[in-house]
Amino acid sequence: MAGFHVDRISEDIKREIVSLMRELKDPRVKDKLLTVVNVTVSSDLSYAKVYISAMDGIDSAKTACKGLTSAQGYIRRALGNNLHLRKAPELTFIADDSIEKGMEIFEKLKDTTNEN
Image 1 (tube, helix red, strand yellow):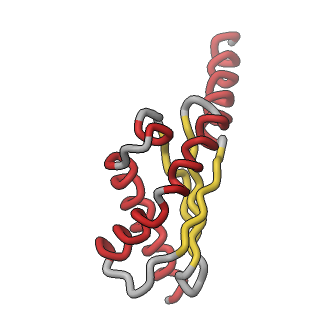
Image 2 (cartoon, helix red, strand yellow):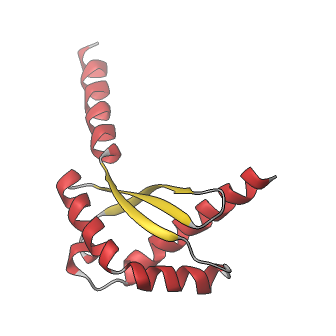
């Protein structure tokens, strides 16, 4: 039962962070095509790792993570208020290149289907 609760909270946090990223005015975050790939929450709900990916590549995701880290206080307060959490988790933003790798795999698959 506890696993279900943690999974539900991580999905709620993911949804809220996506909506909060649209409101941020930091230029490192605002004009980028960012996605939240995954949110991993600890079992006691006090820590959360947020994996961020960008369409522009891993360098763009790293700069966006720096911007999100500087806005961590705002994001934590908004998460606590919007999700009615007793304690908002400490957030760690990690750059992820899964979208870029996914696009490479898609291109390779498209090339192999065109050859046949």
